[in-house]
Length: 263
Image 1: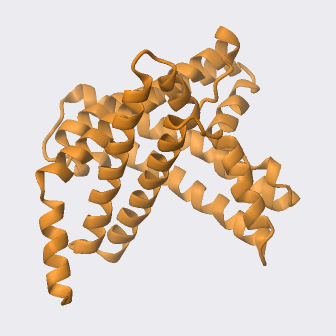
Image 2: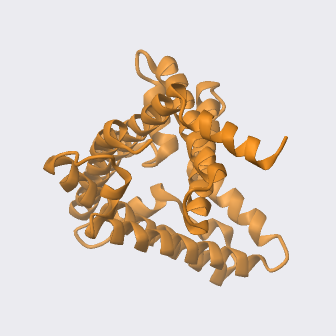
Image 3: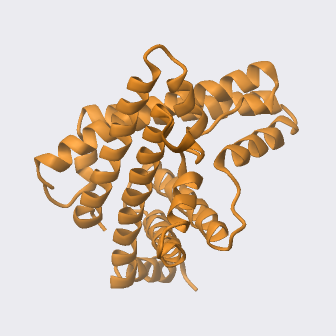
C-alpha cells in the first residue's frame, strides 16, 4: 500500500463519526476521573473516611468500580480512552501539524492507551496502584545503564510538562483546542484546572529528581504522593483543598471539551 493510501485511510478513519464521538466520550471520561480524584483529595485533606483511596487515577477507578453500575462505567471508560487514543494517533499519522504537534499527539495517544489498560485491569479486578506502578517503572529505569540519568531526565520532562500546563492555563491557550468559545464558566474552569495540575506535576517531577539523586526508586511518587506531600506542608489541608478544587475545575473543563473539542 502506498504512503498516500495509508494517509488517506488514516484521514478517513480520523473523520469517522465513531472516532469523533469516541474521542468526546474519552474527554467526558477524563472529566469524571478528575472529579473523583478531587473528591478523594478532599477526603485525604480532612481525614474523611480515613482517606484510604489513592488520590490518583487508580483510586478514582477503584471508587468508580465500587458504585452500583461500576463495572459498566469502567467498560465505558475503557472504550472512551481507547477511541481517544486512536484519534490522537491518527492525528499524528495524518501529519497536518508541525513535527512537535505530531510528537505531542503520539505522546497523548500512548498516555490514553495506558489509561485504557489501567481501567481494563481494574474492571477485571486486577488493578494495581498508580504509586506502585511509578515505583516499578522507576526501579526498571534505575536498573538500566545510565539509570540515574534517565530517571533524572524523566523528572525534568515532568517539570517541563508542569510548566506547560501552567502556561497553557494562564494564557488560556487551551482555547485553541476548541472549535468555538465554550462560555466563561468553562474558560475559568480551564485556567484554574490547568494551573492546579501544573502545580501537582511540579511536585511529581521533584520526586523523580530526588529519586535520581539518591538512587532510590521508592523516592519517586505519582500524583497521590504529590498531593499527600501538600497535606504535610504548613496549612496543608487548606492547600490540598485548593489543589483539589483546581483538579475538580479541570474535570469540569473536560466536560466542556467533550462538547467543544476540535475532533
